[in-house]
Image (cartoon, rainbow over all chains, first blue to last red; front, side, top):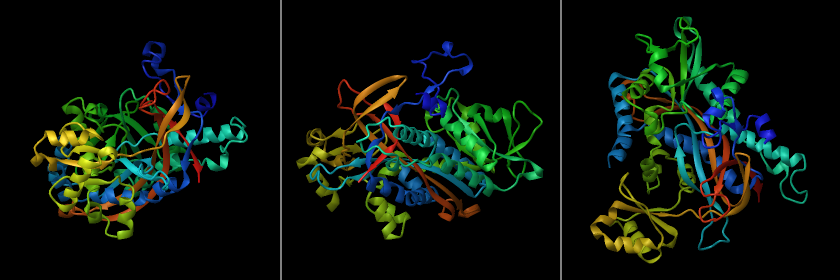
Length: 76
Length: 404
């Protein structure tokens, strides 16, 4: 928690945790919700997600640029 | 959605003055292990694609640094697989800032010698404020670009559009005589109906859309991220319309969960058989937004038999993602909770593109100016079925520990 706060891995506390009265002018912050351990993740899956991202960027840019298709699809 | 589209049509009728658009996207995935053959290699299946206000980029960088720190001070057992070399630092913070800085530069200089800056549109009372602040600091310190935070209700009070050019001009409350030209409007608000309290907020969004500033995202880009669009893209042939290179489209398609129509086409007839006979790995979804609830697994045959067959084509059959359960401990508000968790990988992307001008607007993208992968995020939450452990849906930020 000290590391998180020192390095700005932080959030403003939810009202249910620290009420507004206890945090005058938003003076208080708390650590972001984090896991204690890094979670195991298959390297091949991580590489695949990264590798396909530029294709996804292009796909959605092209969808946004094609109004006829978008309109037809939304109206359906 | 309809209201947003109206904003787009209004601005379109008048004509756009900025051909460039910026997307800072995030594609979210879960690991899927085929239930019929658990020995096959795990794959990723897309959960959703975000085209607006993709958050947690800065925190994803910081949490991977946290776990590396803990590994390097010996906080984890020495015989465990948790080593710094298996915990890559997510570059989301520098990469997202770089994307914004790229758009800022592409905008060019301000008119009449005005200085330029970036707008971050924020929600009043935002809790995830440090995630946003890091982007501001990175923009200032690494790129020399100033960012101003502003909420939608403050837009009409503090900005105006220059006559003719429609340059977006901002006068800060502390210096009302200053004129700053906004190059890029980055939305970290405005994605849900709750962000528009009334007509004034819609008017503010319309002003921003009309302006010469580059929008991240434009209204039409936000609409492209609608759930319905994602569903249609997953149908046969849709992705291929946009990505003509077969290698590219098949790689994208490879991250979709299988999705089948239930109409009278040959594919539909085959899916009907699946739905009635082997429904255990599927969810049945109504095709229209607000068209009713999702029906899961064993409930599907009974539900289909309870409605007229002529209505079946209004549904699609989608394969459920079956993620592995892991054990972890989530630290939240100073408390520890241990138990079964599932993770969701988000991959960020930054893209700047040029649309057609005048009559050509909306008839197909003209040029991709910049296109980058921009880091990743792992979000881990308590597993639904887990009782007494981590509460279901309890989210936290996490780092990937790469395993082969």
